[in-house]
Length: 257
Image (cartoon, rainbow, N blue to C red; front, side, top):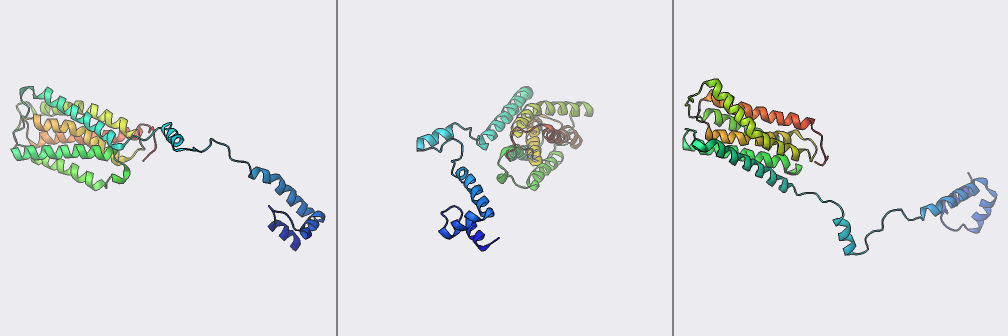
């Protein structure tokens, strides 16, 4: 390649000086280069295909209105809490026909543990649907669940119910499962609207099953540690694990975080 060829390449896109034009007329490489560049140049000047940009604020607003907008996450939280509250109220009403509170534990234990369960239900619902940047570490959820287990088992009245041990445990287990199904379904529907995250699924399971746990906390008169561990805490933890497994198998309708 001659020095003039390099100068021709540098001058592409504009008129060639007379000395370079005379060189290009006698150089096969430069003629091929100029012919190829001339064939590509019209394409580079063609405007890109697509709809024109909005030319006014009104057109921009119309364009934005034509596209779906993301639902605020707190609306899903309100829906979930509404379902939890409705099922909780229905369970207390149905089971409390002969007395709303049958738990014979001390008032401090009754109120304190009840508030702790409610806090876990609300906090679990928050963790299930809140944006990822608002979700704290696993330690917060684990500490809350451990506190509920500890106070539930050790904070009982110690009074054994009139029914047999197996009958009492089975009755509470069935009640907790029945009360958990509607909140669990609602939680799974909302969870499938985003990408699967184990923390969200586990938090939703603890919250949904916590609805039945709270109702049993007030209604159940059996305060023995064995009954509370097998009839109240074990189903609660098991249903939380089931929620995690179900969500892992269900398809996600969106892969937003």
